[in-house]
Image (cartoon, rainbow, N blue to C red):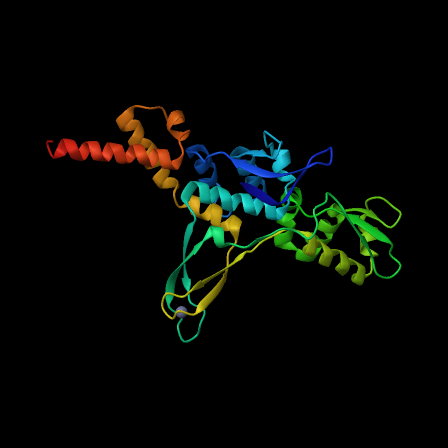
Length: 286
Ligand SMILES: [Zn+2]
């Protein structure tokens, strides 16, 4: 059974964690291929709402539900989707960072080995008593809606994006409700740091570095592994192939594009194998 490291809290305050995935079909592959290779938070939301069939008792998983999943839960789901569609093994190419080696090598690792840690405490909101005279703060953890809202700003101005994130996640500060920008700006840096530190501690985590031995020198290589970039980048390279496969099946079976695009990649490839075998048998005159 697959479970989100964090989980989805519904309006009644119930936590849902068990996930059921739908297969990635040609339609999703096409959507991803069009994404430009890096994807975006909005696209992650769309992919998840199409490919996650159920989270606990929550079905269907609407874009709004997918948007409100914690950052690590969304990464976790992308990993599991890739695993279900294309298997567990990842091959990555890069230059060994050890100075005596520096060879261009390919590394292999398994997605099931990517460490996933549950958060410090599961709750829809968390309370922290701030240092100094700042009182209590109530906050939620960052989710997909924050990523969608802030990713553009993050690329331009990280400090501003972090302030924006705090403004979105803090539900109550001291005796007042959600703080405005001025109240946040007035917050002593120690108090702000305390909130950010607690958020990091409480949030579930999917490790975004990978570790594997270099095939040339045998030493351990630690490299960044950006899950979103990996997921979209990998699918993008296959868009040409996707259309050739659709053409091949349409040509031999006379199925419509819509029908073929509803197949999973595995099914597509199986039919292609069957056609290839049949042609081989015909050619050998058997
Ligand atoms: Zn090496």
